[in-house]
Amino acid sequence: MTAYILLFVGGIGVLYFGAEWLVRGAASAATHLGVSPVVLGLTVVALGTSAPELVVSLIATNVELLPDLAVSDILGSDLAVGMILGSNLANLGLILGVRALVSPMTVTARVVTREMPVMLLLTALLLPIMWDLEVSRLDGLFLVGLLIAYLAFVFRAVKDDDDEVIGEFEQYLSETTEAQKSVWIDAALLTAGVAGLVMGAGAIVVSAMHLAELFGISGVGVGATIVAIGTSLPELATSVVAAARNEADIAVGNVIGSNVFNLAAVLGITALVSPVAVNGLVLEVHFPAVMIMSVLLVPLMRANLKIGRAEGFILLAAYGSLATWMWMSSAGG
Image (cartoon, rainbow, N blue to C red; front, side, top):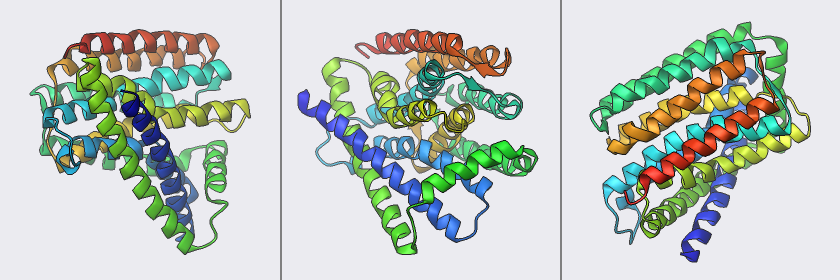
């Protein structure tokens, strides 16, 4: 078991650096091509937060690509679906909760009126999509279509955002691309990033599937807890460091945007590549848990457009309870 734990931890590390290099290379290359800073900020943030989940999901649902892994396709699909839902739960409860305890966060009006409703709608749409216990290629096409429509809407609406929001994106990009001076460095970073993502994701999938068998937990339970937390740790660390340094705060918008991408891009693209089987436990436990957390966040944000330490404690307590429910319900699954 120790070997699988070490493999999992190592996979998380490689996955983190892969995502970091991919984002830096993509941001720098796009900057050299003259892409708008705001548009680049929106897409780079989404790429950085969702690329790990996407690669893990693609590998998990195509386990035949991994040598010497004698597991069923169903276990791989369970792991992918559990990770996507568990990642969204961790984003809302764990990341925002810890971030708020370190330093209270302000919530911009655009998050409440534009981004939060989209996330709630996409989350609710999962129920009819998964009701037949499969996310088909047609469902995947529908989700990707929603993502394209959402991005088109955001790119048009961002022109009306205030200078502070635009300044935050530009600061993020300047920090991300400051080291790159040549297209060859961009290419090297992109190549290393993709390689890191694939190797790290492969290590995570292999170790997680073996740990699921050892713990007697279903794939969806391990995906929703261990794997989801693991893929969220880099984002959690970055968020805490930013809070400690009192840096420009786009944390809430980033988390909401990451959840939208997880549902539309990660699940949608994964289903387009290969239809995803859905464990009945997802409809009974995991979907309700994510929906509860999503709805809970609304009054906490709308109260005074701030997520303070009290709200952070509530989010963490809710996350702990819901994640425990997911884990316990998956025992012996």
